[in-house]
Image (cartoon, rainbow, N blue to C red; front, side, top):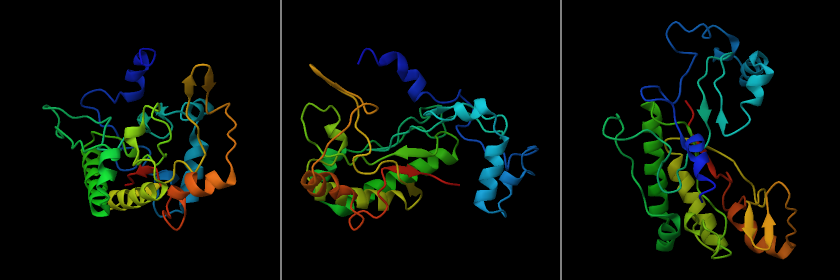
Length: 248
């Protein structure tokens, strides 16, 4: 953990106090961008996207590839951090006594909530988190992308993030994801971040060491069908969503 501490301000930090997390150059008063094609909502989305990308410099494109995207002067956009959590409540937001959004709800961790075997509870939890995510964003005190729920299966007690998951049962995990996402998207929209087996996180358990950029996983058809695929099956979870996105 000590090796990670210097990175935390970079990963978790927000804009300076008083500066909104998000800005919209298309509607800001006096904006020189409002008349440009990418701000014209009557045009097809592909046309608007192509216009926006064409205006970016190579440096701006490169600096937009990471979690912490730099400001884009060519489009009038502030810097943006794609990484905000919503596993058991929103985080990476601006709160506190001096904020217009002084506090957010911190729910029980998924490993606990899933143990209730209560679909209504899972949906209600997702809904409340989504409402708070939307409210904080509207107040200028949060970004608009949230990573949740985690639907990796618990396989080894040495994995330090077991508490973020619904547990080791594939069916239970899939049902948790369905209902959490359905609740969350009452006030938001949802997008995909991962598909089954698309990512293996770093692992260092002496003498073994793996990283997602170098590990070539070999999973049997039986293991994939009975375990890894279950939480992501289309009939169980059509949207395959582990990333929630707020769209304006």
